[in-house]
Image (cartoon, rainbow, N blue to C red; front, side):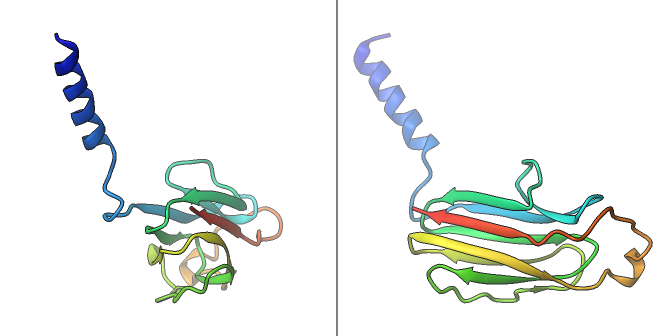
Length: 138
């Protein structure tokens, strides 16, 4: 294979592998139920964490899904002001999304409610964790 043809193939592969900046990306953060502490953040399939820090590109949509045994209200604590639409995730698998268009550091937490009536038999160990999320947008 000639060097010229190799360079063309490499350029074509790079074009396919890099998503368009205008298209943006979506990252899903789940509030997952845990035996100890009741709930934690989970980015994709990564290990759950009480304090989660992520870095994303401007234009990324963060999708929050509540898979805990209690409702959660998403609260922005700091960072460039966002308009949170449907921040009350008040049933299993409830979700909300926010698009991060401005660079900066965003901090979130949740306010947890009482266990759903059908989930009161679920036992957890220790106090419920207070979730903290830091999102660095570049």
